Length: 140
Image (cartoon, rainbow, N blue to C red; front, side, top):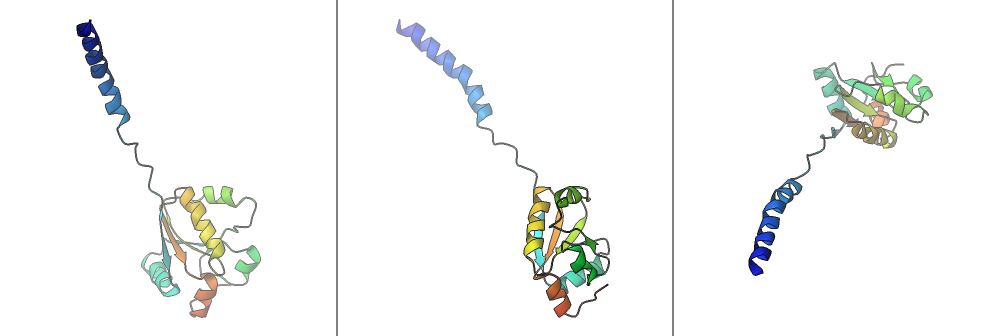
């Protein structure tokens, strides 16, 4: 009686081991999110000079944007009801320098960009106010 029981247990152990091996494999790693880097106005200006293909994304309101913005900036109001839709339409493989007036709204925008798998994001510390205070170029 012991012999059939031992054979059954051995067969069960052999059959179960491949299943356990498959289950113990680590899950594939999720796609990496963008590495968001905070930059000062001086660092941002240097980035823009070195790489003219960087998209400056100004997430302030249209009125704020019209009162003055970084030259060449694209306005995408984070308070707009269709912000997520407009953001999704952008090229996720481009490099973006994101800012608002002081840094709070742009931090939220960077988080949304990370969630949408943008690959390269720079965040302007303290926003447009810091850019302006540093005497950097402004376009109206």
